[in-house]
Amino acid sequence: MTVAFQLLPDFLLIAFGALLARARMFDAGFWSAIERLVYFVLFPALLFRALATSPIAIGDAAPLVATGVAFTLAGMLLSALAQPLLRLPHSTFAACFQCGFRFNTYVALAAASRVGGKEGLALIGLLLGVLVPIVNIAAVGMLARGSETRVATEIARNPLVVACAAGISWAALGLPLPAVPVRILELLAAAALPLGLLAVGAGLKVSRATLPWPALVWWNAVKLLALPALAFVLSDVLGLSPLERKIAVVMAAVPTAPSAYILAVQMGGGGAPVAMLISSGTLLAAITLPLWISLVS
Image (cartoon, helix red, strand yellow):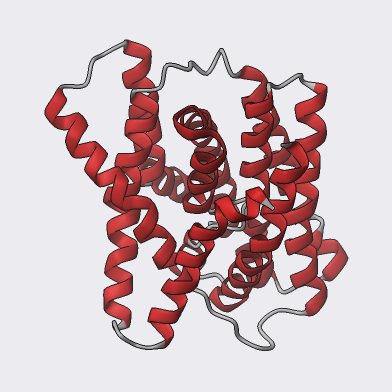
């Protein structure tokens, strides 16, 4: 399968990161520093560059953006249904709620570059610019238990939100990027994906009895099956171009972001159940993501 081979290097990097972590060639402090470097420096540089230099305006990709917002909101609704259906403890539900709609941006960008090159990166950059604030507001809002001040603070200092807002604003103003800053951003962006994928692998954690099986199945089915299926249908209904359809399905079909675990722990939620969902979802996505992309190819 061509798509599977296209994505194989990315998932092999994740596996290599897991191998390095299990072999204890580097300690936990090293991987924590890598995650912070990617999250606070490299990944924002990649997003800003992709958006600031993109020739595609949000208005031109309105159907794609509408598709992304629609399947994201659907993921929130399906995640919320887990509480009355599964009757989980509130702390577990609040932490796992985000796992139905948050996306692994490292895997999303890697897949978009494989299937769409620079244009694919520009399109998924626009989606990220719109969806990153939405999913973070929803995730932080659930964990903050209604504290509007804390939600606003968390969103305002989120490096991904800041980078997306800055990149979109820069492009909207039509400002040029000088050669030296462009080269620096290129170098930082080039390091973001490989280091990010290695960190994803190093962060994989599978613990027994941290989440009931029905809940594990529910959230993985929502994220890896229901959302890409909805993206597939909506992209047809809204008349997306072939590349836009691939990008929409990629964004919907990638596993949950590793940052969901960090957020859950930092805000007093259950970290172990979220780690279980992230790890199992990432492993399953190695199978489901190529299948979804093949379906729209």
